[in-house]
Amino acid sequence: MATDVYALLYKERESLVRFCARMTGSPDAAEDLAQMTYLEAWRSQQQLRDQTRAHQWLFGIARNMCLRWLRSQQRDRAHILVSANPEQDEEQPELEEQLADDFNLEQDLEQKELIHLLEQALALLPTETRALLIAHYVEERPISEIAGQHSITVPAAFKRLQRSRDAFRQVLTTHLSQELETYMVTSHTFAWQELRLWCPFCGTSHWKAAAPKNALYFTCSRCNPDPNSAIFNTFPQGVKSYARSMTRLLQFINGYYEQRLAQKRAPCVGCGRLTPIVIEPNDHYLYMRCPACHVFQRETVASLSLSLPEARELWKTQQRIHLLPERMIEIDGCIAIVASFESLGTKARLDVILAADTYKILHVIKNYT
Image 1: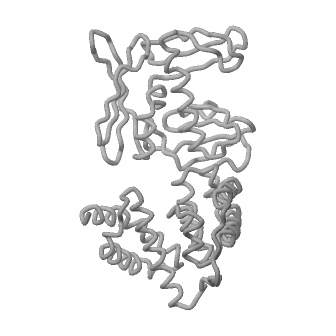
Image 2: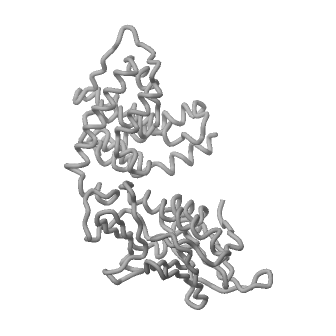
């Protein structure tokens, strides 16, 4: 347990200091508050029973440290309303669902994106608003627990969260509008917008996206210097998050080709007509050209490999990965292509082995734990 807590503190140190600085508005106090958080976490490490919630547990301690510091400074106090008879609300699940449905940012953004934006907005929000948003969206506490902590009813806690959410949204759409644009589609335009997502093929440049109405295009200026073409395109169907749109696109590619490669034909995405899948073994890509509606589809060995669940997991957890030079090998008496993605930070690597003549996935080898 001690080793786990020590590793957690070491890993989270920089983000914890930033968190304290934004929570209090005082970079000078942030280092001291982070150190106090370390000491408290070390003393109370036996209370951490679920290692999967270690991040939330640590930042919950930091939040309480920051709130105590703010109160001691007598500025921006959190005025907590106390109810003499806290009530249990039988409609709590409906309240939770209503909150989730109403908070569009939570639906549209990945959890890590939402937390990062919240950290950016903390310095611009009142203390109580910060505390409520962190408790619900970072620490993932249910409304009933938040209500109990503040000695108020569940409906009252729900209303406070609604007000905090509205304040958060206002900050994002005004003071942090440029930051928000790097995470989600806020307007429809053909202009390229640089994103927070790293290109998974080179790992050195960020993705760029263009979002004309009802379409979404992704490219990388390093991997694809042509400004008039894209590496991926998709139809987001109401999904605003760039990361979530990319995830859904890769899931679609994987599901679309997984069984149909063996059949050597697939329904056209434009009209549904069965269309031959043509393999280009020398250039490591496949294509389909529908004779009816003339829709052209093309996927490379690299994109087919990236669409696998294991590759998506590597990209999500490592964030910065790159594609190693593809190589040819002989395996089980067949010529095969090896497409490997490697982390730029930890050297974790994923090897995808595909049959050279059909692009069927033969093996997926995870070289990391």
